[in-house]
Image 1: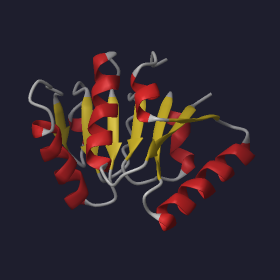
Image 2 (image 1 turned 180 degrees about the vertical axis):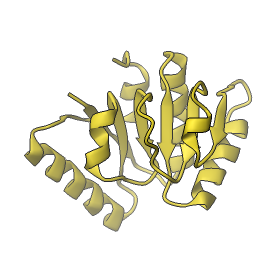
Image 3 (image 1 turned 90 degrees about the vertical axis):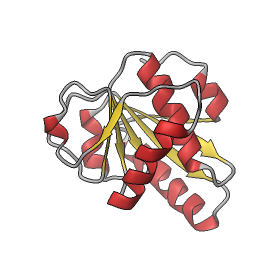
Length: 150
């Protein structure tokens, strides 16, 4: 069963949160796909991952041809791939739940700083809970960063 974790995002600092989550999962030796709606957002995350923390190195690539990078640990894309060899999906922007079954872990964000995004997060959580097809958790970033990723 896919585990879906909603991480509380109290301030508008999503790029930083995405990088921290990607680093944690990468450090545990798991492959990560970061999905963004647009190429601009994906390239912003790509650039941010190179510079967000001086002492961090997260090998990654931006590509919409994910199948061309079968060994890269972190891939950023704005096109959902056919390839199903990723452990974790980080949703910079939400994707359809039909994709979730292909991942062990899906990370979503509850963006508390924006009333519209917060309501959308609540709706996603509620809809997922009603399916009874996923294990759902709601965590603060610090709690997520200190737990073992299964």
